[in-house]
Image (cartoon, rainbow, N blue to C red; front, side):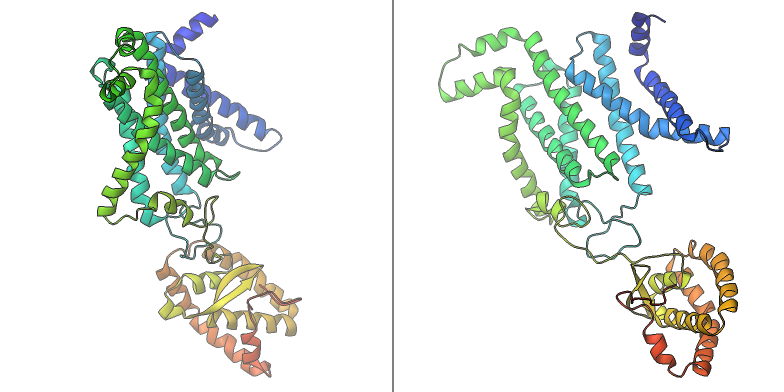
Length: 416
């Protein structure tokens, strides 16, 4: 296929071709990564399809948005392609970001709430999320007004106001990128980065179209009378002034929105504090409690995840360098295992191997407080048995129980 025919085919079905390119590149990448490894062909196709759709295709859309920003499309067919790419970016970006947040370790919980394992607190404080959502919605509304309303029907002041609203949305995107951009969560910054490209392209295209379609009005603006009202009219009639006028109008628009949100209980400074009153992120200024570790020890899981009135957590402890929640049942079981290892090491290895094979798979399914309560109750007879053995063979059983899982690991200490 010649370059001209390939370009024509792309202009006819840009999204289909970009999707196909994403699948091909995803398959090639997975194929290269799988070289030398034993993997089934069906699994390779499944993984490559996911990589092509959720990773390569968004990157291709980003490159297309950047290309359309650098070089403005003048032909009608090319402009339609640019608008189709914008629509696909907004739709797929919103959906993919929501999916990524749902499967990631990010939780919609504020910084004082203890989390589990590698989970992270919300990047936007829950109490300030309505303010951020309203600003993002206003930015989207400004973009839709600029893109969907025909230029001859768009008054200059309305265009400037729409640009100002679009700038507020861009501010939210910049704050989101600054908050979440890390080596682990860089994909979360991809969609707002595309929104910035789309916004810049929308403003550039509107000004260029006004110059092309309404040259007489701009020329007439230079010869208007010079009173204050005439000067303001002359500024609005010249489309080259719209971007910086929108930058000025953005601040009073932000003040109006903040005032309206304050009537509904939002703090006036929520625009900024919603990002700083968080933990675990780039702009965070708070330090959250250490995460509770749900590791492979299912009694640790029970102590941390059961209802407090039943499992009765006593204090935080340390296991394998991680913070865990300790209750009486966990300390008794660990003291019993320590005694067993001292008095009968061979039998201990047999019991430990059985525990590792059965207990670890059970721990992965204890993700409900009610399941943790059930395991706690089922382990009660074993706890009484362990306690009986300790009181029979240990001269100071309560001392042994009390020193299990201290706040800091002891040198040479017993930690299972």
